[in-house]
Length: 311
Image: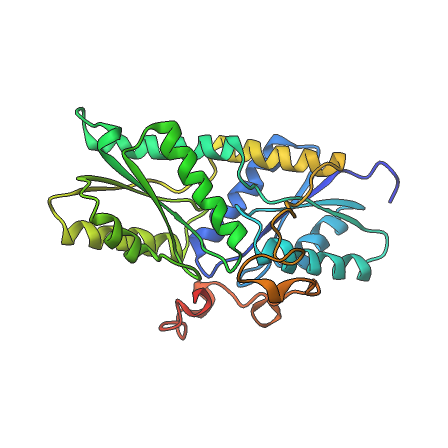
């Protein structure tokens, strides 16, 4: 291909067995394609869903791409963004002749992401009615949860900025899996604070089993405590500010200034509780579920295993 091959963007997702989640992720790529009609855009998933990362690269390559910018469609850099995806991209680049792949950073703790979160919380607040007071309200932010304390602490940081910036009476952070406190426990513990108004906000990009589980637990909490008003805030999804952050990450990557936050990286420095991970080789851990399929492919035999990957 000549030097003037079109710039190419690969949006890399974790993948989900939830069909709606995959559709929402694809929608994000479509928004970016619309914004940049001159670019080649494709999606690739790490696991559970197709197209795989290798499929996405192949699509772009067949359209004449030689330089590909790969951006992780992920909120935080934990094991997937730090290890699994780059290891996959490195392997593909070494196998494909004449393709140069540049890997960008996760969305991270970014002012625009926090503004998008604020907008979602404000949408939820409308259902409290006219005499609503933020200082009488508890904000519960639920993150994905990772085995990486740095990624988890970023959720706490976002909670704190929202609490202080928006003026909530109190705010707590919980996680949907892997680490503690889990959703149920977060609500049970914070119940003792005595707030009569509670906002449950999943700090997630897309729907999926975990977001649906968070909403279900919020509903159960509401049923157990009818005297409290529990409101579920929408997750981030394709809020315009989320798209703006993606675009910034893409531009940084192409200018060569986008660097993963390695300051607290458990693979590089001693982090309390993860000392054994220092110097571990970069390798993917997802070979077993690559392209394993969404629920539509599996619904006949997938029941009973919904939470296997989360604990």
